Image (cartoon, rainbow, N blue to C red; front, side, top):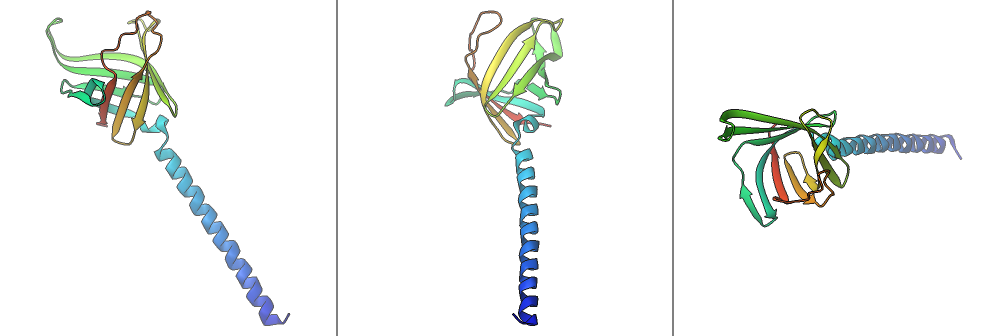
Length: 161
């Protein structure tokens, strides 16, 4: 093989190696970005407003009572309901706290007694989650109190923060 042919061969090999590095770097950066964007443990973080509820997916009622759920990075939830509460004579904000766990299939939310020691309610949901909307479908689960009453099976929340 003559000198010119060797140079062309070397240049071709170097070009292929550079293209391989560029392609690998692009793939890895896209994969990482995509996985963060689809990671439910990150997507769920923030404050969500409950906008619709119902027993059946095709029979939802709009909610305008100012009910908010907040999911914090440490696995804590906070629930806020604004408005007037005639029974308590309160006009303002009620807050409750709990915990949550989320994986690729289920979101599990737990509510605790006022002293935080006893789990009084546990809800398991199948969910659809994107950056601006969270759809929850309640799944049957054995409640700590022994009661398993569903008033609402479907919940729609939109991101507010």
